[in-house]
Length: 437
Length: 73
Ligand code: SF4
Ligand code: SF4
Image (cartoon, rainbow over all chains, first blue to last red; front, side, top):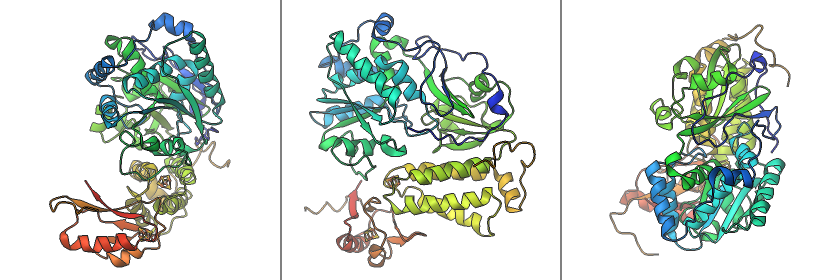
């Protein structure tokens, strides 16, 4: 997909990469992965792990049909694996729901990252395709599925080519495993949304749907359906190969102007160290945690928070799909927020009134705020809009947008007051990229 | 359709993807539905009482987009 990077140029871009991040014992990658600019080709010094290298590292994948599948689900429960697509839902519970919901299950590896700033899933699919495919094969066997799909954005060429090549390698090697096929959806922000995938695989458009029943119980064509993020499946594969070596790591994508860096870090790593390994000691003002639908927080308040979701939750945050967007000391957070909410409003799948009209209304108000042209009643109006929109879309897209804007209003409270008074706290040298577009 | 047992908690729900926002429901179920700044229904999340259930049913029946329904927890 065409990644649109809403980052304001700053001195951040100039800072060289710091020391390599701490790597757990059984890594997914073993080294940071880079993306340059808006390019979607993942770059790593360790390169692609082909089937031969993958086999050398892990040996044969255990087969999980029948009783072995049920036992493996117990293992997933014991190690406490949770989904890494953003929801952090326990994997074992989801798999059990699918297993008990009926026969002919469908399993889907979701590789259609919506967030333009994300990169961990494409990195896995491009550099560690066999871990993801092993994970999908494990799921298909354990759930006795009759269809196994790798769902990608069309236009994600490098990713698609990598998976197609990996599937061919497996076929040539004569692996005994369920058949897996690649299906692509439109390169839209929301075509990776679970209900959109279900609708598309059932023959409809790849748009989110309102659903009372979960995909797990009634998904593709009414069949029990597992939609699982590709990082989750890679971790499933690691656990299948050796549960003891299950890594307490997490993948984060740090997005700074000019590049994105995917880091594999221990969950006990503090945000300060994670960002420091990319930016050195650049002074920061705030950070957007969890991507475009995440939350802004003042840097001083959160630099000591650990990446573990439990730690994040204690502070009212969520790592979501692991996207971290640091904001340099000289940047205007309201400008950043205006640019992101405008992108999110444009990304609405244009189905639900509160999302289509509401997010546009919010985006306009935030733009006025950023441009210091708000009227006297605009801030209360913005607050009212946010309260009205929350929880009212057919999918969770508007909820994330609301969360991001609400967190900006509190995190950048001083900027809000200054802008309402027609001033900006960051006027001066800091505005390198401000008025370019 | 079979009537649910009396002690089943029911709520009025709206499928935002189907709803066209003309707001007929807000006229029929005044105690359960109000409209937002853009004219779309905000539906009460409270469990329906015996009295509000009648209002809710009227709104469900009248919704031209079949976007409203009663959901049990
Ligand atoms: S809430 Fe927005 S993105 Fe989600 S289904 Fe409705 S219109 Fe589409
Ligand atoms: S009557 Fe139906 S379509 Fe009309 S506003 Fe209410 S829920 Fe929406």
